[in-house]
Length: 471
View (cartoon, rainbow, N blue to C red):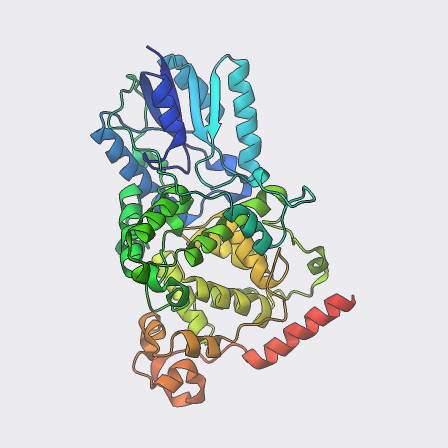
C-alpha cells in the first residue's frame, strides 16, 4: 500500500487542507510530519511569542490527529535530510506540503522539491494560506501592485465563498519510531513570562473556529466602527490563527457569506469591511514576494537618506511601556502581557517610535517580531513601512498620529488606558489622557513624565522629512 508524507508547516489544521486532502485521495497511509528547522528561516526565525504559540498549536494538532487514529511525527534538523530519512524508513513515494512566501523559505522549498524529484519522489505543493498567490495578480502593465485599492479591486473579483474542504474522518499512518516529544523542541520560555498569553489565547484549530463564531455573533455587525476601539473586542483577533494556518481565508469567507445569506435583509451584516482587511493581508504577501528586500530595506529608496536618530535608552523605554505617553505605554504593555496589540494602537505606537522618537522602523519591526503571537514577516513589514512612510501605499510621513487626541477619540472613557496603566486607574478622565498636567499625580502614581513633547517632536520629524525631500 502506498505511503505519503504530509509535511505540516504553518498550516496547523485538518479542515480545508489541500495537501492533506490530496494525499488522502492518492495514498492509503499518511505520515503527518512537522520539522522544527528555525535555522532555515534565515534571520527571521520565530520569536519568543511565536514559539509559545507554536508549541500549543502543535499539541492541539497532535490531539486532533490521535482522535483520527494517527499522530503528529515531530522532528528537528535539516528539512531535506529529515524527509529523506523518513522516506527511507516508511517507503513513502510522495511528499505533500503547502507553499510559504518568505524569501528564505521559497529558496529552501524550491531546492527540496528539485532534490526529491531527482530522487524519484513525488513532491506536491499547494496554496492554503491565501485567496490568490502573489504571482497570480498583476496590473494591466503586467507588473506587481504598489497601491492597495486597485489590488483589492482585482482580488475581490476572484473571491468566491466556495465550501472549504472537510477534515478527514480517519487516517492510517505507517509505523515509524524516532519521533521527538514536543518538549524536546524547547519552544516554551525557560522563565515563565507567558501567563498573560495563556489567559488570552487558545491556540489551535478549535480555538480559531470558536473565535470566528464569537466574532460573527458579537462583533461583525458593527465591525466597521468597533474595530477602532481598543477597549472593545471589535476585531476578530484571528491574526495569529491565520498566521499559523489554524484557519484559512477561504473558511472565513465561507462562514461570513453563509451568515450574511441566512440573515434577513434588514439584519444582514456587511461583510465587506472585514474582507477588505483580509485583503490587506494578501497585499502584504504580494509585496513581500515581489519585493523580498523590504523586511530590512526601504521600499521607497528616498528614505535611505532619512536622518534617523540612534538612542538605545529611548528604544528601551518604548519597548517597556515607560514613555510617559499613556496610549503608547498601554499598547506596549498589552503587547508584552498578551502577545498582541490592537491594530489602531499598533499604528500609534509605531508612529511615536518612527516620528516622535525618530528611531528607524527596523527597531520596531524587530521588537514586534519577537513579542507578537501573530508575528508575520509580510504583515509586519507592510505595517511598519506603512506607518514610517517608506513603504508601498504608505501613510505620508507628515501624517503623525497624536497619541493624546487618538486616545480621547477612540478610548473616550479611558477603559483601555485604565486596564493597562493601573497606576493611573484612579486618575480623573482628563488627566488620564495627559497626566503630566498634574505633577502631584505623577509623584503619587510613579508614572513617568513624558520623555518627549509630542508637538515639538512632530515639528522636528517634519523638518527632517523636508530635508530628506530636498536632499
